[in-house]
Length: 455
Image (cartoon, rainbow, N blue to C red):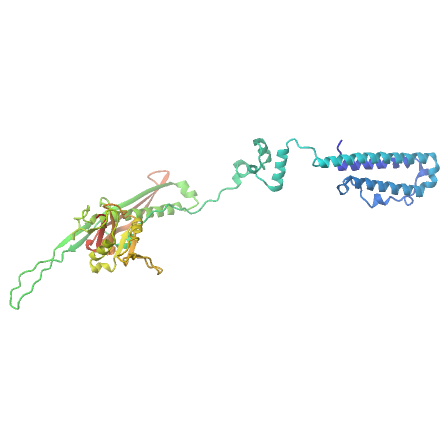
């Protein structure tokens, strides 16, 4: 039988007290000893007898033996004269017998303690040692169930009652943090508007007048007659307006409950989309319900004959699939000097990667990176504008343009952006009907030259 420390100590106390109750019964006043006469042994008063003294049963037995010896000496000193009686002697013999039995019991208990210590402790061997070990590890180090190799049933017992992964077990108390801003996918916006001339009008359309400057003149003598000379002619060119629109919808509930201002966000998104659509039209628009793009004014384009000054000149690149460095020099000097002061190269980023590799006859790169903050890099001494809507460098593509875009292209705005918040048309949705009327076209084809990929 395995005994706990508390049970062992209780048994020791019972066995130790029994002979004293027999030796000094309350019914026999003749043997009653005054308290000062029989002092308690020092081993009993000064030493606490524990079943786990220093964790060593031998120490416990030694303490009990010391207490017994001191008690015996006290009895001999104080009641020795009365030990001659047969009754007292019999009771002392009973004490000795009890002490011998107690010593034997303690020895057996010590043996059991030592055996239990060798087997890992006094506690019973667990029925499920793997589970017990895992549970102890979890309670001691906080290991999660995915770190403990348990069965599904064991996991259910090891996991804490409250868990973040299960809504009903506490997951509802740990909501996710939401971003109060929205990151949109990149839309490449053409800088055509910022590079062009922009005007606002207050009518339904815009017409621009052009003159051929066909004034005649001649040299005459002092008295010679002055025949009539040629008179300049005028031509009107209309710039129609196209209309951009968007009709985004959102329910009233989401507008009320959203963590961000959806109305403002939707309008910003629409304006960004309008800018993207404008850039495409200003570069290559066909003029159907939209502006005419400047590339269509090139020789052979759909709007080549539209302008009274004619089409934009086109030069070949000198290479069937690329650009020859000499052609960049040709296009620079093909442009009239009056427009070269504000001239720039216009191409997309892929084309820019091709022309950066070009060199002159001495092996110097035509591309020169800038070393001054705020100043653009240059190609053959001229600034380069990254225009995403320009074609790539492929056969027959109008991949590069060079000239003064502000003098070349005209952007026409009518009023600007209009926003109509419509809660009636499509209940229960709120529609944001956004419109913009804008036109555009080439106003001076002489201020721009275009390079076409081809030999």
